[in-house]
Image 1 (cartoon, rainbow, N blue to C red):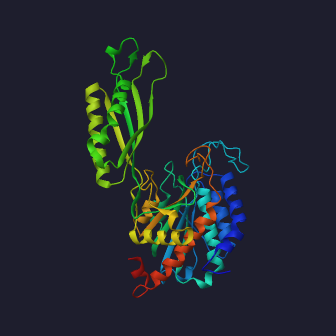
Image 2 (spheres, rainbow, N blue to C red; image 1 turned 180 degrees about the horizontal axis):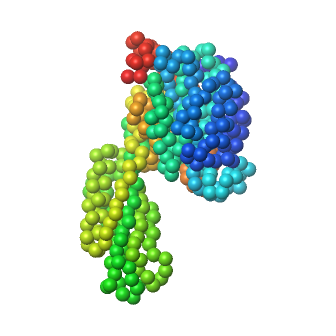
Length: 408
């Protein structure tokens, strides 16, 4: 077997990685609760000579060459561990055994990919200069998200020169790799608004200050914000995703609760939208005589790919998948991703592997019928291994070859 061509070894390893992925899928865990998943990953790594260390509670860090930490360039590779609070609707043999919790974003597959990488790196440890750090991160999903920020605070990227991560994406055709420099995923803010008016009998609205009417007008006012205020540039979205008020047919309630999300691909645009939302909420409250308690809760920042790292992903992708498979189409994506904390700290790149099956309406991420496509396991592992083969020699060849220089 050859370190320069891991394809035969990945093919040999594929059944085991699929079995591991199915086991993780069967036993999903929410953010910062991934104890069983952590144990499975730890056992796998230890059996291959790694010395994994806990990080962010239920996450893990493992260095290929821990003895070289701080003395040689290090590349980090990341997979996410957590599941979502969604009931699984499939009848798959490996369907979730936990009602209300399931792997509907493919993190089980991402973990299987990185375990495949770990296996092959261990087999060829003696042929790899520099160091590779494997990050198995808890709590990526926004429900209990921010695991990347916790890992970063605990030193997960200390001494790391570059970091790479990936995501399966059913919205892109299977066989494609989507990558671009610059912004690839949005900055996110959550909106939480409580309107308080005066309740009363449904037959006497004149004696009330109706929070439902106020809220309905506000929703109608918010949606034209972007095309009118941002013009043709756009680049942002405001969505009200929850509106709760009242519980019967003949009572005007005293309060209403609205929730939503604000996303943009530019920091200045994001701030402009937030300012306009505040103005609309204040004006609406005055106009309808209700009180408004608005909270705009910062979520994940912009995920920005370093140009050199994005170019490396594209080169490796072309070598493995062919020129036609590499594209920037569909990017940036309006989703949020806490990998942004990592690329905000060191150069890195995040890319997408298409999972949309030809001629099928493949369920997307966060859909109750979604299931990760196991064919992506060897493909994703091959790309990450290709990045290690390309980037470590490049970093070692930099003037001085020191860790300080490599990480600068």
